[in-house]
Length: 95
Image (cartoon, rainbow, N blue to C red; front, side, top):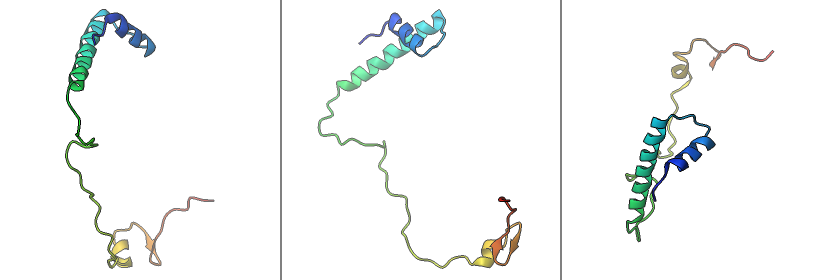
């Protein structure tokens, strides 16, 4: 499939793009190359190829859901800018 300059002008008009002659020529060539590449891909025999979402094999990156002891209140509050009664103290946000 060959794309023509009037087709590129039509797409540019739909996208409300103001392009000069050089840009139309460049886009016509680039879009034609893209469509040529897609046409080349359509020639491939993909029968029996499993569709994938990633180019490389992916594995679940989640860790096991295990119960572990927490770090404790003192450790959690040791770098807090303001703490009181075992809690973070923050400015009042509701009047």
